[in-house]
Image (spheres, rainbow, N blue to C red):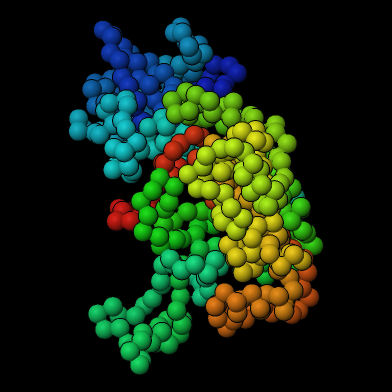
Length: 461
């Protein structure tokens, strides 16, 4: 009985091994007179295992079918390699062609543009770049859970279908079972009472409001799941479906919130630079040659803190000519974020205490009547990476703010009740997973950091 082993395991072996079973896909095949070299990759790591298939190998007559992309099974022994650049190779005693790959296989060439690969997203995981991205994404997702679990946070599954809009900004996907060819009407309006839930329902834009309810029962919680925005945007930074990490911390203020965000970013960078280095090097070598330097700089930086008011004053006193003149009450533009992070602070910076009129209803109102206890984490060359706030825990203030923004209190009755029954100060933030992956790999298009991008007029799977 041969032992089935992963390529990653064999490449890291400490000694020769006999009686192995290795399965994967052919990356290349080079033929000599009496033997052939097959570079075999099984997705377990970036590197491939060199396999030597000689005339005495059972199934050698089928070798011609072991073309690039073919799925094969090899049996044999792991032996020291005489070739340069590799410690081990597999001396095959048997080869079996599991799945042939014809000549019209789209990945015959070694290099393809990202734009082309998006048209064959079902095959791009077989390339070095997208295989590396998938492994990094998988490992970082695990590390995010590990980070919070080690700190006593509880993972809460928040609903994907919701009756409330967290941001109050619209652009939500509607969920309905109403027949679109004969939508029931009442007084000229859609009668949602006839729908599945008896009211309007949407795909969630955030799990924050829901996870807050568990924060005020369990103390430290987080959610990590898919969120949806129906913006008709085709930019390199927007998708209709993406993943969000959203922790909430009870009996905490904005300072606690910023510290948790800093600790998380540094923990993820430690893990990325230490445990994902082979895959990360793909992006450092072929996407952004400054990547490792940039990530290390953020990892070892002391994240600055500056109030929004002081940030505006810094920008106004900078002597720079900005396309958008910085003024109090307006959001920061990319050029402002870059000046603050790359020229003034020369590193990451939290901008906190933002004008209340440009922030969401749930953010705690400061005593000055002008600002809320909100924060954005800005990163050099990236801009905003994280947004968060201390939440408004005072029922009267929250009710007044909902009314002021023209929202329907009936949609948030359950949220308001958490402020009636044992309310406590709490804070949290949101980190878009894809945005972090763009920062972590230097990839410039958000469609290339998620396996199956959802964008306007693109729904292949």
